[in-house]
Length: 243
Image (cartoon, rainbow, N blue to C red):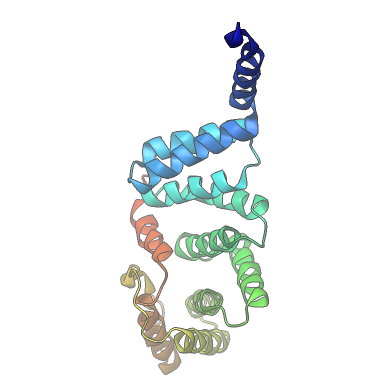
């Protein structure tokens, strides 16, 4: 008769397991963890499916949006990466590193593929200010602000606004100098250097442009691994992959 005594306990345990398996918060974490395992193995299609499954259970799951953005970066899908990064910035709390990594990655994408678009450049301006407000010695903040000013200088010289271009170049050079001083000689993943060359419309290039370009090129070898996405986007933006 003793086994009968344990029947209620066993039933309670089974009911608990069933309820857990149906709990959206538990299910989404299982999908998320499964996606992480696939991601670590380089199986991005499977990882994407699992992160999307997690988001079906909780559309405001910031961590899943962030990791889905990383998948999109890996495969060079610009549109999907931007959408996921924007959601991650919105939903991942600012006290978590992933929030600021999403800010950096989105800023890099805008600078790589949306130069000259005021709406996106205004966001770049805001993001760099936020990075430097959070940490005045942010390497990413200074190098991205340098890129922003460099992009503005390029547009100014194309429009034959030389004085304005000189101002932006001076600001870019100063930001690159600060970034260089924060992480001198640190090696990282290189970006596409050809995209950093002065445009033909700037001829002859002023000495300040050459100085800024030199500092910018030097920083190519100091960037974080996320910058690899920039060169990928430049070559694949016209033929994005989707799952």
